[in-house]
Length: 244
Image (cartoon, rainbow, N blue to C red; front, top):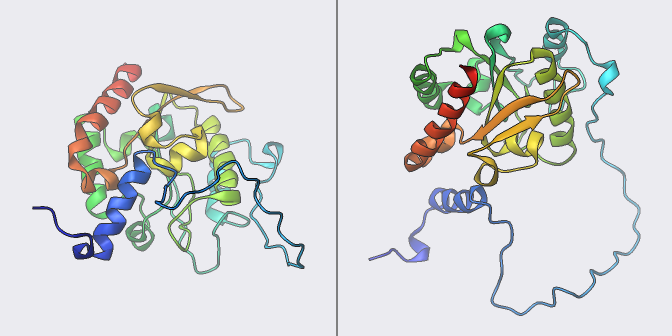
């Protein structure tokens, strides 16, 4: 027998909601009728103070060499979510390996360890790499954002800024194949969540030319939904085939 709705804990409810978001649900309907064709009311003008939004410098102002761009990321000045006390989790691995992996942003555990994809999800990630015949030393691992946002989300102006910087980063690394982990990475670079974008190749347009990319589930998502590991493995096999 199914449990009553009131038996759900806050964590279970949040997990269920995240599942529907990952599945592509973006509209919630209620029982009350609504006139969807009615124009939205025009808000009354009020005096507001504009909040400062992060902006990305134009591409020509960004370092044109990978080592200089890595130093730009380490410095953190002007990057989304940067602050004097915020941990900056930088790229790692071998940029010349031919395979680049990008995740959305560091987790709380990553910020504590200074390493992307750490803890339990890092263990799963290492197993995924081993199944591909790779290790952290034979890939180039980076995040769309080197900093973690206060609420763990990437959206709005920050998403746009991080996406522009990530695209420049990819162009400098020029990998033979790029694996994007999770919805944040998919939306920032492809405008797609994993549920809509996985299972096929995409092209990331960069200043150095197009880079082939696969979008798939993040290790964190797979830990919560192990039944999806088969789909993720199919995506990784596509990347392995391309790298041959």
